[in-house]
Image 1 (tube, one colour):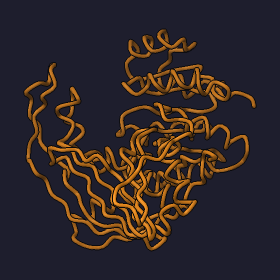
Image 2 (image 1 turned 90 degrees about the horizontal axis):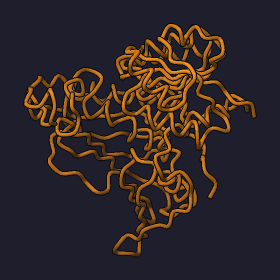
Image 3 (image 1 turned 45 degrees about the vertical axis):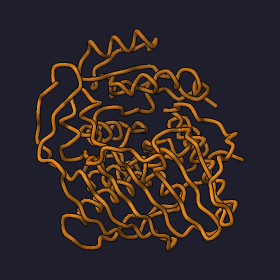
Length: 362
């Protein structure tokens, strides 16, 4: 397979693992030839650190005829703009999550990609990791019988004690639903299929938050503009029900963040925003769950795996596992969770997607 030439836009914290993996574990399909961002000093530093030949402005990267695929690692507020620019100049796109902030923008991106005959994919690719793929195998093998319901739970007290500049994580397009939802909801769709309808209630535990991370923002308070506790139920196309809670208003973090209940047992997964975590299974006649041995690949931080798979999908003429279609479905679910809580009503999901195929063979 011919390597695909990639240009990366964005030099934030997450960019390092992408640059490393694409030039090592996934170098059989990918060749990173350029990097760009708003601040050229950051671009030059990353290019030198990872041996990337070209340090460019964003406009220079978009105009480079050698670049076939743009990897968008910018902040969420810039995803739509960068993704659209790349598609308009005829380049495939793989974006960090979410696909866009506004649902209409996500829909426009998919329509533009189809019009141009290009492919668009989107993180998270953690659904392709060893832990979630092991869960998928167990479900496919009827280890818990027919799945009946699921619990999807994020409990923490927000990022102000972890992030040195956390204010944007409490603005429109962020909060617990948009910050963590893509991981958890993509995992739900990957394991059990698409969502038909949601019903939630929501609220804010605090009107302001204060950064506690040492640095220039330590002690700085800022307003909370989005719901920080959203809880409700999703009805899946399969008929299964999922109880969903995303909260930045809890002081504790649950060990099992996804639990799937079936007619013949229960499946426990720790953290769906990791590639590898402990998977436990409890059969109907057992009183305690047991750890399931995981012999699948990609249990370490494998960001870039979705890019690698998408390059193969372009070559093979198939849909990638971390597809734009699923990303748009997840984006609509997140908006529906917020809207249902605000409007106190059921919200139907209009976008259609298929459950992605099993990625790793057992």
